[in-house]
Image 1 (cartoon, one colour):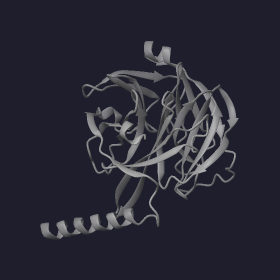
Image 2 (cartoon, rainbow, N blue to C red):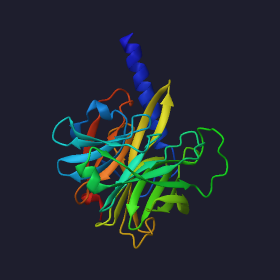
Image 3 (cartoon, helix red, strand yellow):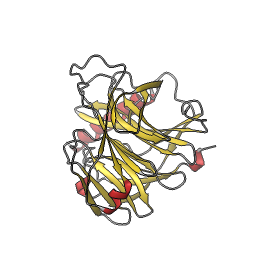
Length: 305
């Protein structure tokens, strides 16, 4: 029986290798592999982590996916614990997917849209001063819609899911998770509370599902996190990657240098943020094969040449 199981596992691994090596006729440009450092195991309360931002050398702010409550957690980077829990009392968590920040505010994107039918997409804007000093805060609300979506019928195969957001100067940039064509669409909306139709700026051949984004504005570097997924015998296997966009001018983020990094931890990576300089942190949800959840760290500086 053990020999049979071993042979079956070996066969599945061969199939996975063949799939991921042949998913395109030509490999993406400038592909490298990154081996991240394991920093700390996540507290179980963050079993559905889907977004995080850097706070300081000892902590991050993070949040869970939909259905987990409208809460932000201050995560300790030195030990397995949550330092503080901050409730956002005037909103709900329908499908929170990412978080970003500027000097004065954080922005949480309630833009998960797995079935393509949502008409209530929102971004929550919260004062960083209040976040640091209070345990219950209110959010300003930014509502938005896509300019290119007219069909809201329920389907799992569409291009109007979104799990990635960054703050860039006076705009918010959104990057779609395209289940249909495995590209990503780049949209922008204002940072002020109100209702908007997003501007569709560009489409990028991401060759996978984009699940998170982060930016280091001082270094002019953007990182887009994502993965490929294949199901074999009702088991999901993941091939995660990071697209690095750098040396771009003004807001032409796809016109600079572009690098793709393959992550050698094969799991469902969902959240990413820059730390200091070119360090990045990232993590995955708990439902990936029952693996313990860790925050990982990698240095991008060697790749940015």
